[in-house]
Length: 45
Image (cartoon, rainbow, N blue to C red; front, side, top):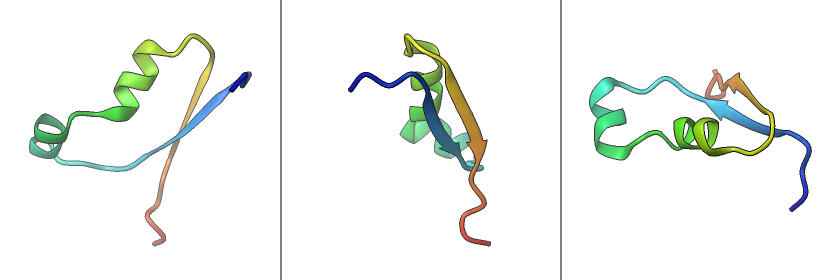
């Protein structure tokens, strides 16, 4: 897909959760070859 911007939702995760599952958002931010907009996801609250 030829997108001009990548938008990702971020949610709060514990340090242990980040260690075990990794951070997909962090990988996207580090590897993307185009601008990334990260927005805080509220989880429907």
